[in-house]
Length: 259
Image (cartoon, rainbow, N blue to C red; front, top):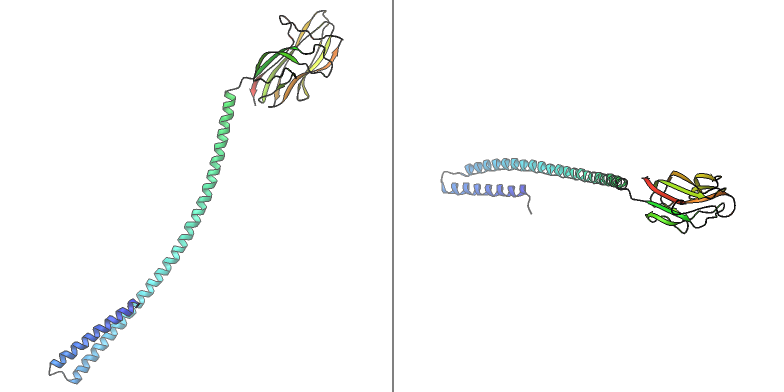
């Protein structure tokens, strides 16, 4: 396929040929056209045509050079822009991922804060109260097991083992009341997972049954076990007394604050 400059050159040659043909016909039809006159006119036409063709070819070459350069510059700019756009897209994608992760983290924190607040506002009822004892002659090292349930909200006190299993961590108020016979002594403590949290000593010298109460607050964790343990006892035989109407040997606890 011919280029645009070749096509234009071909058109100019054809036009020159037509001009020459016209001159020949004109001279042949007029008797005054001599051979010298014909050649002179022909040479003049050819010179002008050659100059015109050269000028047009030069213009076409210059235009082709400018167009080629412009296309090359456009391709170079397009490649540069494409690279910059891809870089911006990757950067924006990375920034979007970071923002999404940050938003998710903040949302999780807020959701946890709302949940914690909800648990604190809507505090669950956890409480127990057990009376009477399985063994009224305990010795040092024994767990005092309270057998009769008065209250057990949360079902966390076990009448078989005498242990209260903490269902929810926080601060609890525990109360232990022991009624002992006259001339008897008992030392005992409130134990959380094997460690004493509070202890008491009761010694009766009044010649009758007396009741003593230990009340304490303890910070415990979920799953901790709490029970009453004998540290020392003085006197032989039955030591603990329980009479439902007037004298209650009992163990109780209630949640007062959630951690």
